Amino acid sequence: MTSPTQTASCTALRLLALLFLLAALLLLRQPLFGQSTPAKPATQTITTAPTRFSVVIEGAPRGTASDVLLLPGLASSRDVYAAEGKLLTAKYRLHLVQLAGFAGEPAGPNATGPILSPVVEQLHQYIAENHLQPIPVIGHSMGGLLALMLAQAHPEDVSKLLIIDTLPYYGLVFNPAATVDTVRPQALEMHDQFIAMPNDQFAATQPLYTNRMVKDPEGQRQVSASSLASDRTVFANAMLEDLSTDLRSQLSTIKTPMTLLYPYEAAQGPVEQVTALYTTAYATKPNLQPIRIDDSRHFIMYDQPAAFDKAVQAFLQSKP
Image (tube, rainbow, N blue to C red; front, side):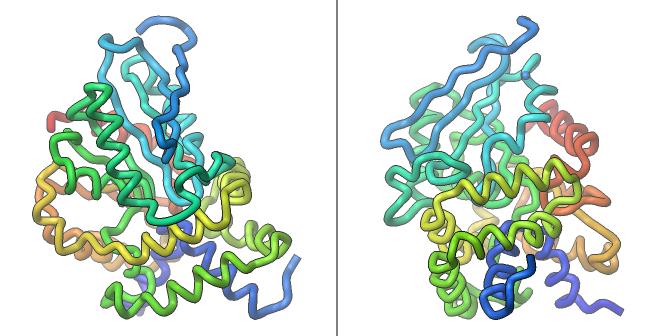
């Protein structure tokens, strides 16, 4: 019988790109083995000073459709939403974000100092200056954490949240009883060794990482390419901030309606225990609707695109 702790650990393998970092650490200790109108939607690329991120705008012209903000995860490209975007751009105007330093984007000011809080403040600036308040926000993994932080700091910015396989504290992947203090020593070790890893060893971790995070072969290829093209320091620093950010005590103050998508595979253990990992973590979050997506790993949009689209469409059509 699988224990709750075992279930949490197994779910963590599908949960976030932090698995990659854990796998990389193991490899350090072992030998390497081997978008209703035009047929083609308008696209506009803009950057926001001081370029913490760039935004690609796709879909219907401004004022003719509802706006949606989409945030990718750790070391991910906005292209994780490409397939879904094609299904949305006839009815919605999409603001597809990509953080500086991820997936080939120049690191800019994200190269040094804090990343997550400055990104949240610049997202607020972008939303306010473009008169988008309030806007639905979709976030995957670390993008989900940023979405939660934005809703907590600037509730006027966000009408509703769709969070894709995100926990309010990523340290739970180590232990259901984890705290920032107990996880910090391991997080610091991971950070330092990850930065020091030679490029060839970094590349050698990709098959293990992608297999654990994505089932779909093309999804595996895209996820691997994004991580390899990410600035290693930005990657590591964002990971460390992720592991140092615990929003559980603030969830009760985030009144924004939220849909949570989480993946499940039979290999994770009893479905009740997997569900409990997420529902327990979000126990104090009001206006929460959890939705399980079966036969999927962390990148639900690649592994179960039809189920993902159904959930996204229902979310966007729902009233806040």
